[in-house]
Length: 380
Image (cartoon, rainbow, N blue to C red):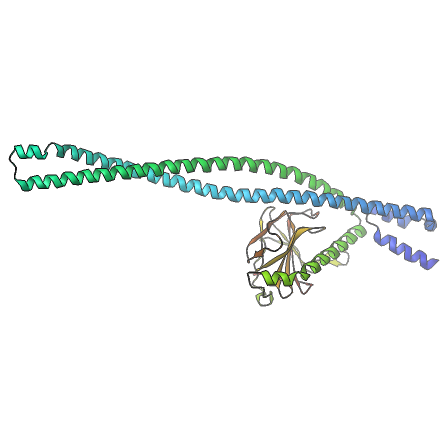
């Protein structure tokens, strides 16, 4: 009987996720082994687990929604930058055409004036004044030249006017698009801010649920187990990604110390440092500004692009030969499974998804399934 009580106590204590349940278990008298009390404890634990699971489900939906908004903002901002460049270029071209047009008008006026003056010395006047034939021929050639030059000048001016009108039309269209996109951007930013407020409330509720060390440790261990399962599933697909990749999938082996840093910032948590209790960090956490681009450390194929409990929105890149790099806590994902990337390509946006209180990037490297310190692999 004592052995049964001991095993049962251990099993229940390890599954408790919040301080309330833990205190109840530790301070209850020995008679808690009665069926009614055991049932109450199990119900309490089950209810707490269900509440935590429900909160995590809400968090997933909220952060996926945030990802959608953030991605749209990122893409819209990029389009606006291109439009701004086009508008500047069109304005410059329009100014050039206006200056060209002024020069063409000036030339045409000069040609018309010369033609008018030459008209006063027409062949008839020259004949009446008994000029010789050589002078008449020269004046005729000059008249033809003026007429041809005038026609060319008129045609050139007409072409310039058409080009200038087209530039004005394009400028007006690009400006209209810019106005529309700015309006869309403002609207999406408002929605994003609102969703982030809701997300923060959910994160606070989750933190409250797992505030006890036991609950926190249990949650982190479960998250790590889930992540390993996801990686194992992704690993099974690596032969497919290697076969379809349009880039070299030669692994990371010869690139130690030469990988691009995914973001620039201070390392908040180092590989192998204590996360909580006896649980250590399997990667590093780098502080970075929310919305900053996360770049691929090396060439590879995206084998995972999804929300994972505890890690938030995560991208995993297969580099071949059993080498993978993972990027978590993101605000938005810019790549999908099957996409090939080159070193330095933007793959995500920095965030604090997965219930994180601080903004940053979780970065991890695994070789044949085993986590390795990523710091020595990065360019110093």
